[in-house]
Image 1 (cartoon, rainbow, N blue to C red):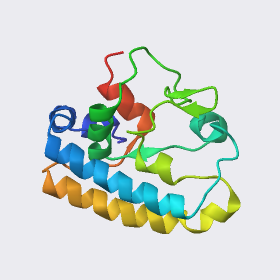
Image 2: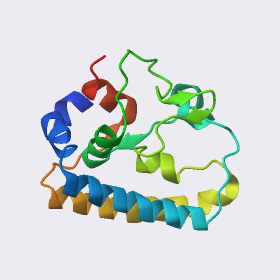
Image 3: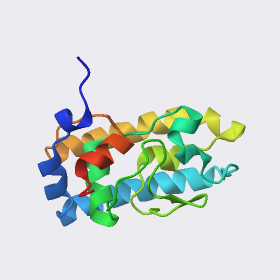
Length: 155
């Protein structure tokens, strides 16, 4: 049996956690450290949002409940139904949710030289993210981004 995001996401806890300033500060600090490490590597975005077209490029983005809680705290969930294959926050090749975007969006660059460090950075950051799940008593899960957004969005 395949389990969907609605079956495993603690939506009530995600929404509650998004209002807790200690959590928002901790997650913001985690992302700030990650962004600094990535900036030091000077990656270049060469496709201007093609990675946000998940269906077209046959890839998926996965997120955790604490990433979703931070997103809810800092960004706006989609208010209207959205296409299953494209991130609803991508407009004309640009991400419109820079502050709250998930770790996978921050780490992924399709340029060849970036692919050598992405795996290690992802694993190290996931370790920190798991620690936040424990610290803030949130069940850990790894769910597909678009499905998670649909579960939390009013649309």
